[in-house]
Image (cartoon, rainbow, N blue to C red; front, top):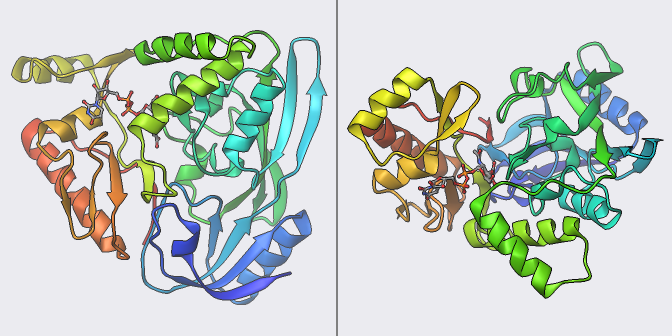
Length: 342
Ligand code: EPU
């Protein structure tokens, strides 16, 4: 077991914020995981599971914890027939590399989730979604190490209790489950085209530019283009993607809001109305606002960026200010999306 000590977690988060952690263990095999958990138990320390760190806000103080960093990148075909393939992928495999792999092999189901940072093991936690796809639609099972009962166990899709940016893993206390691998079911049939206005325009351009490429690759390229226009590249501008969830309200509440704010955009989702939080933040005048080295991205108000801060407090107090302003104007309580490690 390779144990490092006093590692700065800011080096492992896309927000570039996070204090030192007492022990930091990289895990590839099942034995590595068991050994790391045993080490934490023996030292009576909490566990912090870490993937790509792309959806985490970690406090800048020292953490007396054992950080388990999954770096396993195995990829196995566990089932295949004429119409589909089931691929089990190690938690440490980079998500976008996996998306590229499936696109190049002609497997559909996750192509609209192109260009999302992070690792495969993190995707079930917040049920990663974009442009009409959510990983919950393709995940067959999630293999975890249960640190409470000290066994490896499988969670079926139903066991995961997926919801909008939600799963059972978000509700269990941190460190209970170490996600080891995820099995996805992908289709061999042609992909469905994401029903987003901008996607069809970009798709047409990609078809014209790359006539010999597959439809899957065209979708991937279109999404890559759209995301690069609307979301800051974490390699250059530290961020965690959407900092808040969109707001779901019932029709009664929605019509009440619409009476007051006639321009309010909405998307009908089942029997609920989804209101884009980006619009709410823009409407309170905070798009492009910055203070204390952190700010609201000027091309997309749902994204907070770290311009020069090393303090988690800066980003969280900006989030609080936004929460307060949106609450004051619209009477809506917006929720933070990334995981907060206090
Ligand atoms: N909008 C504004 N101003 C803004 C930003 C957005 O008015 O500054 C409004 C517009 O009305 C726009 C609407 O918000 O039509 C929706 O915007 P967009 O299509 O960019 O999607 P989103 O709701 O802001 C969600 C996900 C993204 C995902 C996109 C695309 C959440 C929390 N976020 O964002 O996921 O890429 O849809 O499907 O659901 C992430 O989770 O980190 C993430 C980037």
